[in-house]
Image 1 (cartoon, helix red, strand yellow):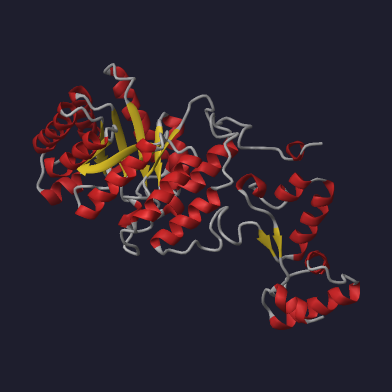
Image 2 (cartoon, one colour):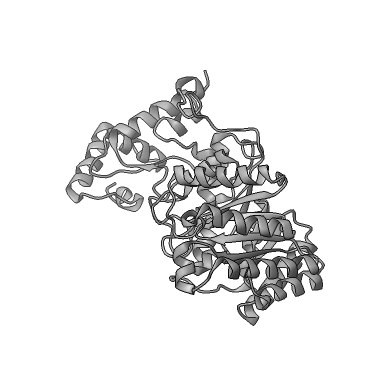
Length: 407
């Protein structure tokens, strides 16, 4: 009997189920949006190159590799990353963020031509009424900036994705005017942004559906739709899945969700969910190096991964609770996969992880016997009680060295 025979999956039984027919692309923004976190700074080039290599191993489709118009260091780093992608013949496709001004777009064009590698320009422009009010912009100004940016890209033979900032708080008629202008000028893709993490899953679905509908009505079904989300309300993953349901083609994210304020959609958690949902290209994807990817991001920016972080946190597959440990141990005697999922919604082994059982004040004999056996110590009832008594007296999780010291 398979473990799946013992789990009734409400995710796939009911009125709303995922559309598993489309290929969903991913765009990693760890090296630009992720670095906008106020708790980090621009890391050394070696880290960036190593991260691109891991993105390639994870089969991530594209990456925003920097903002070359910001500084000489960023320009040089983007050039070096582009050369790595070119020389190693990586499949990952590079793009660079740029405001809708020549000073930002021209460095991307220069690097693309110099390296001989297509680099998509992600030209962004604020679109919400509140932003327009603050900047004293009107629609005529926005359309002129759009025209200048897209024309500059097309003239210099670099692909252009047109991005509106704060799309989730923008008026429908304004979004339509800006995007149709960009597309008719030659932009091959557009990006909808939940810049301040305002959206709910319903909002993400409604927005993507609206944009997809008017693109279809205007004969632009070939235009790629990207979704860029933030997690200020903790809804970035459900928003990304809702955007996919509505027809988004490419989803943006960052390693461990790093980014401005509360961060962006976590790329690693998104990969986990696409795999578990069984999307084409993800169901059988090897994600065992995902831990290496998240650890590198954490090290690169100096932001630790919380212990309770989904899948990649140290507590994700760890228990010190007696009832849970007993069930895991019983399941493991019936088959390896059962022990992986009897008290977990995520199969640890699929992501290079394994179940960990510790001993603490809420533990039972099963916890202690498991740990003693792993430490090759006598797991008699008397010894188990000795360890349990010590754990309850100290009211904390015991280290293996502490347990060994008792004997």
